[in-house]
Image (tube, rainbow, N blue to C red):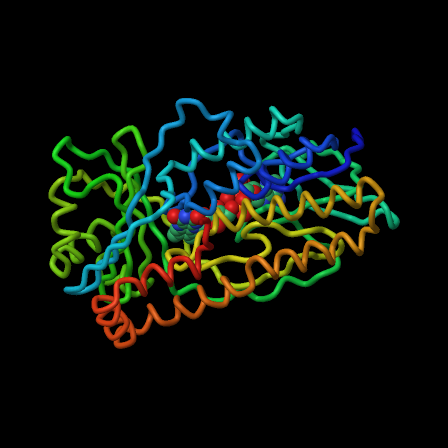
Length: 385
Ligand SMILES: Cc1cc2nc3c(=O)[nH]c(=O)nc-3n(C[C@H](O)[C@H](O)[C@H](O)COP(=O)(O)OP(=O)(O)OC[C@H]3O[C@@H](n4cnc5c(N)ncnc54)[C@H](O)[C@@H]3O)c2cc1C
């Protein structure tokens, strides 16, 4: 069993982990990022990079790296519900970008800053080894080959569902997950049914569907439904989409111009809210810390910001400017100041969207006062101007 020494081990190579690794490495720390997948791959996501996320990536110098990165500028958001259509301008604009592209470029960026990356390795346990260091146990995925990494700090950036075993805690019984999220990329014919600069969110009954151009003539279609609704359509997402077309002209137009297949990427709907900003002196970032309901907030923006905040707190500790406990406190305060209100509003908005009558009243109100949608967007997604 080999042993290496690092200033920080980052568990997970999504936006939260790569940004934490990039910022810490750029500040001169020895960082290793452990990602259990073999290379970057797509992830179920609406693939809308909000203006707030674009701005945060500009601040850490990311945009110098990704020349020729396929994406699409998103300049407007359109919300469609029953007969109501409300549209607002996004100024500054956001981006539609495929996750396999974004995540790969972020990993390359972290490596350019000096972070080491271990692909195909999974963290399966983290132990505190005295007051000043951790022992992180990793193994080759699917094999028994393992090693321990010794590090002064560890950051959990493992996303919303998975993680590593904490030998001292009991896992809570899994909650029932009544919702399913689904997504696929489709190519569009040259005759476009919707301008590629528009992100469209369509609400049908209790379900919603988001559509965004992600560059290279590809579109992302991503939606959420109830498990029992999907059962009604023989567990086929395409059957569900066809049923949507009878209820919404906007979806009907889309289905007639795009070739949908039944190769959908499907996951159960996760539990939302705050999961914990630190666990046994390990800082949690991105979805591992807290999960926003999709369409009510932007998880990628929160992942990027929390990575930057964690790196800044750990930098002070690693340089001896403050203690480990003070570093954790700083992170918790900074996270709460940035996201507590946003998270509360997003959860309330999600509850509101799930109640058909409240949704109806709300959308009527939006039709009367479209600027209200702008205020909701900025309140739940952060203001960058
Ligand atoms: C339906 C849906 C639509 C969404 N749409 C949008 C959107 O349009 N815009 C937006 O901003 N957000 C959206 N989100 C949210 C967004 O996808 C997440 O907030 C974001 O991916 C969080 O990034 P992360 O880095 O925290 O986690 P992840 O992106 O999940 O990355 C975690 C990484 O950790 C790795 N990992 C896990 N466990 C281990 C381990 N033990 N050892 C090593 N590696 C490990 C995983 O392989 C993974 O690569 C959506 C979410 C859903 C469910």
